Length: 406
Image (cartoon, rainbow, N blue to C red; front, top):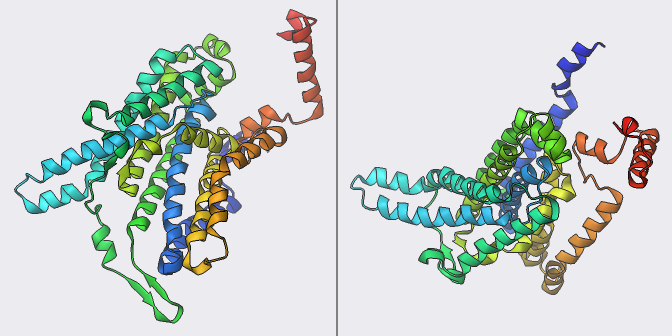
């Protein structure tokens, strides 16, 4: 096989991979429908929706941390910006729609407010990312992490203190309660199978679940295109060595701003979905620990790896919610006592910390790492590892020759 054949076939998915994607697609569509049909399991549809929102957040943060190598501990600020923008501006739009004399148009615009607010809130979050990225471009590592942490806390405190009389303080805001576009029509087609107790009706939770799935697919498509683009390669070069990247023509300032803005944009998208999904927004949903959980999802799953990030978000966001849901399920009443479920929820921070320590010692590249990241952390053979160790030892002890090191 010559190099041309290798290059031409590199981007073509194998039959096994295609079959895997098709199987996953069927499960993603079919499982929530089956859960919704059996009322005692329908609460899991809401759990899947929550997991999907965290997957969106993790995909956005993966741009900043996984690709660009910028540690952002205040990512929840963009999440909050999208949620509050959606509720505040959405409420104003509903009031404006109510003055429209054409009844059909008014009802349509009221139902379509989520679609209208999605680009507005995403743009607002991206502008917030630019506002954060511009003054901190020259910071790296711990200093950048501290600044972003402070920014996240500033946004939360502004929300608690009823910023410009818009956020309603700690009491929070109710999202506009108009049914989203298309939900009423979908609910008019129930499916009943009496023999097995299957009684399916399209619920609000199922509606938002499929909205989240569509947004995740869009995010995956865009992030993959970014990874293979000139900008994505600039992020990788910048992550490895900013000085070397700058010396070969990478604009470090512009690359960082793009990373902050695009990562923040997807945080804002997740915030819009969260506000409409929950129907309520308050500052307690945007604490520092939320940022820590999102960073943990990226690191645990594999920085720079889209499948890894999705798996990490599903595990960290899903396990506590599933346990809590099982404890409250009528079908499993008494199997998991409420006290046990509460204890698991209370100690999940300790469990995640322990998992992170184990992962850093055993598998630092994450559960499903990207190829590039795995090769960086685990050389292909022992000889390469020995050469790297020798070079580091020579550098630390000043014994390496400049011409040899180059």
